[in-house]
Image 1 (cartoon, rainbow, N blue to C red):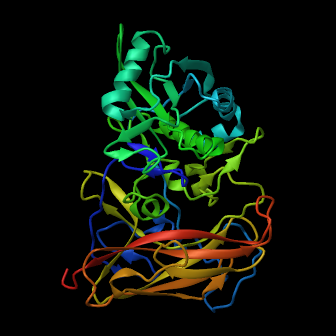
Image 2: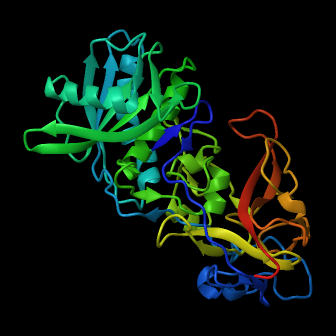
Image 3: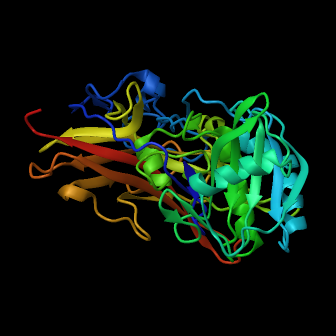
Amino acid sequence: MQWASRLTVASAIVIAGACGGSTSSSNNNGQTSGDGGPTDASLGSPDAMGDDDGGSDGAEPPDNGPWPAAHFPMPQFIDLGGNVLASPKVITVTFVGNTNRDALRAFDDQMLQDPWWGQVTQGYGIGAATGGVYVELPDTVSNTTLDDTQDIQPMIAKWVASEALPPPDSNTLYMIYFPSTTTITLQGTTSCQYFGAYHNSGPVPLEAGTVDTAYAIMPDCGDGLPEIQLSASHELVEASTDPHPETSTAWYGYNDAWFATLGQTGGQGEVADVCQSSRYVTDTAGNYLSRSWSNSAAMASQDPCQPETTGEIFFALAVPTQNAASKTVSGMTSGGYLPMKQGQTQTLDSVIFSDAQLPSDVQLTVGTKGHGALGPLGGGIIATLTPTAGHNGMHVALTIQVPMSTPSTDYPGLVRATLATAATSVDAAPTSTHHDWPFIIRVHEATD
């Protein structure tokens, strides 16, 4: 089950997963090799795709393209086989007394017609969505506490049975906006404390049979209409790409290094969860919309969290990593791993890339994610970068040293590329823009 956390907009819990290990060594192009994953050109190593800096004499190439330089690829969301809402039918549900009723109805309809909808659903088997169906229910939910499984799912079935709600089909999505005095509990957590919104599905009995019906729940946490819009847009795209998270998972991010860093819950997440730290966008009506992961954008070396704002340049330092078999889900693999042994040092040939010419070189740092500057890697692991600045096409040596005393477990890390930018149309003052390339150092016993 997925839900959006208050203010940051997203968090996700579906399947707790960790990944299996492998022994490793370094090969000539800086990739690791071993039983954790392939190391050939299919992984897209910089050397496999050509030498972008014009040779190995250490000369710095000019930033004159082609953009982007060849590099190790970003990960892809995978289809786990569940159904999507191929043609979503959105029904906007509010309760008597909601002063935002008309604004919420307009918002649901507008975001379905905005180009945003095509951008966040491209490649996931989802077509045009329809809205324009509104239901206002009597306010029997104010000053109450409702649990998702025990209360909300039976209420939806009751509303359908009484014809208060239109009967669902396999493409129906009820977007339900609750009053500010309603408290909702979900898997032992409380609305507006742990989560800001979520989506799920539940059984709705009909004459023709029971329909597992998708719904999104938006509490009013008192943060204003923009925050409700962000939560609703987040849940709309996730409920469409993964409408039945507890029974039949569809599109899902199962790359532990990337999605553990971008999301919040152990390396997994849905399409909007992993873009929760990306800046919101607005549509032509001024509505606030969340971004979502795009496989096609990732393949094109653009910002995988779409849509981008006008003038954005995406850049990063691509680090070659491996896949590893999941320890908990049979047949599943996750990516972003650097398998190493205690006492081992290895150097990885990494490449800076950007999807357009940069106004200046990016600055590079390596460490673990924190609230501000990167922190040191765990277990006494030391990582260095040479050089520590550059632009599209430059090769960078990432050297990692694992002491003999480092315990054998997983250590998350990332390389951050930072660019000081001038003022934008959104921010009145110069800002510091950065993009991260995550990895997980999997340390094995020296005797393995």
